[in-house]
Length: 279
Length: 348
Image (cartoon, each protein chain N blue to C red):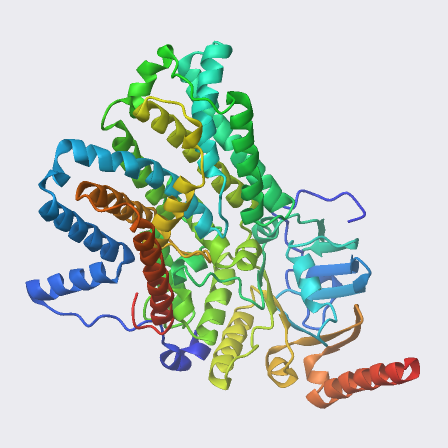
């Protein structure tokens, strides 16, 4: 961050209109990233990212492997800082030093690896790092009850919240990871490849879950995905990340799987031609 | 959630629940199944069978004196095992703790006899020394990125060397003024086992019912996941190294007062290896993420019973390592196989 920032843990006031168009009107943006860059040694992960997310909007963030999608997500959620640029939440600049600070401000993330702990129960996973405690002991009963209620409310019908997460299917694990993020009253939810390695049935459940969150309108979502068809079903807007920059920004209704495929194929062709020229 | 409601039934998952059975026998059966599913229960049964066997073979086995003997073997191993379980569960290991044990008695002697520190303060400073060694282990492992096996191998030798250099490898006498506090720490026959039981109970609760324990399991279970969830991995690992160091120092003082001697041979790898063996027998996974303090207590109890029982019935101590080794292997094989069954949803 290049400029002084307010305490990221203080609740930030909401934007005046609270609405924001799905097409990304500036005034209603719940989240903005401006000129964000990030390098890891000699590798430039993000060159100059400018991204905005309106309240209640679902933004699909697409891009090839290594395009910088996960790095951008990790910067927004406070896991790692950007080298330059700034993040604005509800119009106020923020500089999160930890995931906890971002979470307290209303930004939560469901990572590609889900950040679930196989050895812990469903309810312990759902409350990890925000456990209910009657000092000095964990309030297991209260957490169990709350987890059960939240999963039922979201239509995730697990038989037992006492089950070890290791025993659940990929879709169930993903649903629990999303439920965990929602449980923290996230206003901005970042989903990193939520449909990866998932069968059609389970992917449908997760897509439904995202649609329901969208209908409620109180959560803004960034979804990283590879499957354009699935993403276009739920997204309001599509951003394409290439070589550390956002090169494509369109409402989902104005684009198609074909158009997105063409862009990516063109990128591959350019890369192959560059290799041939170099070789 | 209307959209998901239709699919909720298809999505229903998780482990099959035990069908409800009415009546007293149903309850007894459920309790028996729950008991049998716990790894600690298996070790407890083996412990009891060993007690019965040795009692039948040598009626003196259950006399007060012999039980005290067993507790003196058990206590240092079980207390060190507390720290080792916490470390193993969070994915680390401490090989140096046996040397902290050895140096602790000497440090007490130096502080009281050479620096005239009051006995209680000297005891506290010995524990601080243990915590400081743990901090160094944490710093080298977590901050500098050296695997804990190597870190603690190195720090263990350094502490051993410091003990030998400062003591010239000669035994020392316990300071007279420390004998009062010494009764509380191991001078009195049953002091050690009382400390052990209290510490095992406290740290079992810490591991299974507090945030610290939950974060320790999370760290060992999925370090990246725990970190992404916002858990401070460094804090957990530093803390558990320091707890292990304090346990080593406390054990050193107990052994000093119980044996009424400060001896360089107190410091070695042996108590650490036995403690880890006990932890593994009790169900702690070396790969991290699972283990219990009570299991480790029962595992070290098994080793103490075997050692004492063999001695009592006049069998040579030579085959003991074979039995210990076999017990460790059986325990590890059981660990691996039970974990597979758990993944398959057929056992808890």
